[in-house]
Image (cartoon, rainbow, N blue to C red):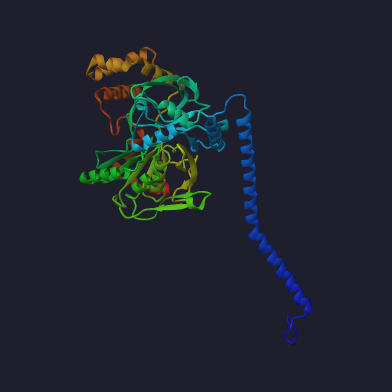
Length: 477
């Protein structure tokens, strides 16, 4: 405080100088600390790089046998990605990169499985089937979402990376690969699959009686949005009044594919956001012009444990913004985004960010929870064993080939005979297996199944009985 002559006392000046010095020192600490921390981190990284160089040079100079430098570096790179304990990040060899290019091109030789590394001690879990690609050798062989591939050609997958399993499953068209499948807690069985040309499918559509447009999105590629737009045009030509979007067993695909597809359902607003340690990965993707589906059109989305990644983005956006009722089972929970970079002849795939739905929900390892849970009946381990034995023995195919066009009485008698012979399976399942095998023999692929699909039946009932608005309000209030 100034004295009566307007001048501060010496004691006050000293006090203010002391306060200013403390504040300046605090400010300098605040500004310098991040730089010191960054320098410490750089110093630590440089120390480990020097250590790596020393070990590498010592091995190269002193190992008992001649050293292949390429193998040493590749091994180190693989180990680096394994240490992340992230099944979606991996070093990619030249062959891996070539295979990735085949998939992007839309066709390759393989069995038709979308797979993921199951979490395990040190990343040594088995390979899990996210979903079989529809109408491929694996799909026709009865491989299902949630199955574990525990062996490929007699080799355990517990110690293999996902890219190594992919490499073993792919191969020349017409050749066979043998896998051991685990279904349920304990039941295991062998399946021999003949490799074929695998085309990456996108969309199937049809009208369900009752003015319901049925849209099955199998996978998201750069062309999916165009195929969905074509399907919507088809629905409009057939005067659709509601829509069912089936995302079950959809393993995802490219981010732009789902963003462009979601754009057909919204005029504006957020579709999905991504968040990463690198600020450049923090993005919000919003709808642009191009909406084709009216805001007031009732939509039901079907999901299950095989719905992953991009399919979860679409389901989450439609649910969070009150555009759709979501029914089925909780999705897979693959909520991370990867980038592929080339280095030399090989490359790597690295998780760069995680995405969140418009409601701010991160679904990685959690999944999208349906508004209404509807599940297909599961089989016990004993029933799974009978199911596998029935398929392996080919009895249904044999019956259909001998009976040619069996009537209801012949089918009923055949099912009764199977049950008498010890195949303890529900009659409904046996009838479905007969129907499916006949369709395979006739080359028929169903777009939807109102006879044996309880999730679809539930969705159709909601729409036909005008219960949609009531169900949507109850689920999202």
